[in-house]
Image (cartoon, rainbow, N blue to C red):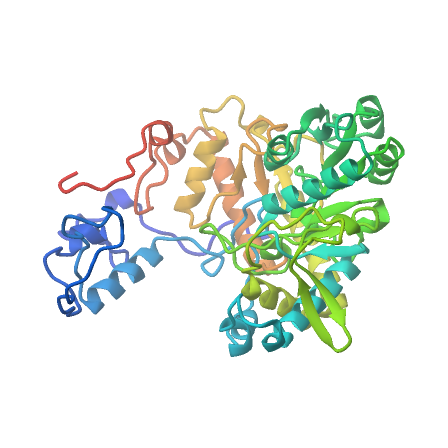
Length: 510
C-alpha cells in the first residue's frame, strides 16, 4: 500500500511574504463591492420616459449602489473565487451520507438539448410530449429498481421527499378514519435529522427507537415501541452508520401488522441500487435522491430532486401532478379532483434538467452497470475501512460496512487532537474533510464515503494521507492540528461566534 506521498510541499512558515498577498496562482480576492465602483456602469441605459409608478410607494429612493465592473474584472473575480472552492472535479470528496460522486459530462450535454432545456412549465402539454416521455421512462427505471407501484416526481430533494411520503401516509390514514388515533412516527436514534423534523412538521409525535450496540435497529426494539397509535416508521437502510439493517423485513412486518406504514429514507440507495429492491423488504414509501445515487450535481443549495416511490398500499394517495397515458398521448394530471391524491406539493416540477441527467446516467450504465457501481461503492468503503482499522477506531466493531465507513474519536483519547482538528488538518492535505460529528450515536464521528468514482490509486493516496495524519496525532504533533488549516485561503474561523453573531451585510470599511 502507498504509505507516503512521493512529493512534499514547503511549509508556509518558510515561504517569503508577498506584496500582493497572492501565493503564485492562489490569488487574494476582495469582495465585488471592494473592487467595483458604484458610480460607473458597464452598460449605457437611457433615462426612461415619464411614467406613473405602480409600486405603491415602495420604489427605490436612492442610487442602487451596485459595484460597476468591466467584463474582465467580473470574469477574473469569479474565476479566482472558483479556485478557492473544493469540488468533486478537484479531488476525492469523502463526505459521508452525501454521495459526492463524479457527474458525467454526457449528462450535462443531454440536459442542454433544446427540447429539455428550453421548455416552459406553462407550455401546452401537446408540445412537450418528448419531455413527458422522458419522465415516464425515468419513472419506469425507478419503479424497476425499487419494485414499487407508483412514483411522485415532484419533490425537490430528500427532505421534501420525506414530507411527500409522510403526507401520503397521513392521507391514507385519514382515508381509514384513523386520523386521531394514529399520530406517532417511530424514528431510530441514528436517523437523519430531517426525519423527525418532517414528522413533527406534519403534526406527528416522534417516538425514538434505540439502536443496538452493533449499530443497527433490532426487531425487538421495534416490537416494544410499536402499537395502535403508530402511523409509520422511518428507517434508513443502509443506515447512517454505514450498516445494512439486517432485521428490515421483520421490522416491516411488525409495523404493517400493527396497521402502520414503512417509510425508508433512500439517502443511501447508492449502496444497493441494482442489487437489492426496497419493495421486496416491505417498504411502503421511499425517497430517492437523484442528486446522489444518479449523479446529478448537488451542492450550493440545489438543484436537487427527490422522487418518492410508493407501494400499492399508498399509490392511490400520491400527489399531483402525475403522468397518465391516453392512447398515444401522455398527460400530466394536474388536479386531484376525482382521485384520492392528497393534492399538489409544488407549482411546477421544475427539475427537467435533473430528470434528464438521471436517466442519461441510467441508460449509459444499464442495469448491470448500476449494480456494478453499487458494488464498487461498497468495495471502496470497505477498502478504506480495512486499510485504516489498525490506526482509527470503529464504534461498532471491525465489521464490513456498506457504502460508507464510520470511525469515532476513541483512538484520539489521550491526545490533544479532536475530530474537528483532524478534519481541519485534512484541508492542508488538499482534501475536503469527511462528515464529522454525525451520526450522533458515535462520539466524535468521522463518516467517510468515497463512492465508486475513485480509482485504487486515488484511494491509496487518501488512505496514506489519513495514516500520516494519524501518526502525527498519536505522536503528539499537536501544532499540525490545533492551528490548521495553514494552507487554505482563510484560517480556522471562530465557528461558534460566526453562528451566534453572523455578519450578513457588507459595509464600506467594515
